[in-house]
Length: 107
Length: 121
Image (tube, rainbow over all chains, first blue to last red; front, side):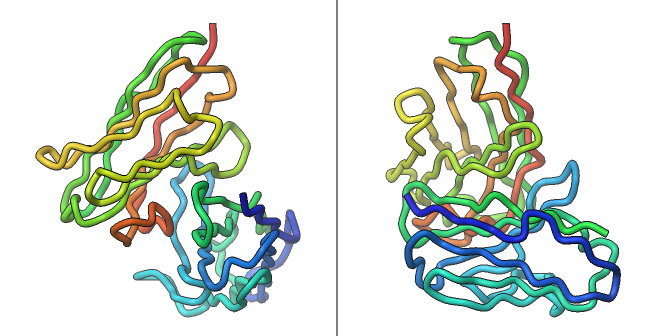
């Protein structure tokens, strides 16, 4: 099973800042890495698939990079609605599909 | 409107059974793989099951293998999760989710609202 670790666990920033979230895989996942946003009490929302492809309707301030074992989600110019929990997920070797433990982005 | 609407959660005793349902509307249901993801209270996301667009290929995480069964009914655009021999550690919000792919139940681009399953005596 591929284990994903995310850092930091919590990131405290202000509106307008740039957030950099990291996801590291226990072995290569090529570029088969996705990112989700989850606000309190809501279902997750797909932000990015295959490392860097923004999902429909996702603002351009969200961007993803990386390959192999190290990946980054960057959120430029944080908006109030961006403060949430972010999860990475791999589909390179499955089952199981695995998620990281999440990064909480807080004000 | 494109959406997934879930039903079937609730309180069940340890060792009991429950069936979750998920109906898809506004999309060609049979073109996509589907999956189930759960979230224990205050915890992260856990993928537990996936089903190919054909409904033939079924996959499970080890902790539910032999206890849970996923299925789909294309005639009614419904996805099901039959849960048996439930344990306290199965307590979670369960989400159904749609994949953009035919075979890989991942990268979920549409989610149900989630239903709470509580396993307790």
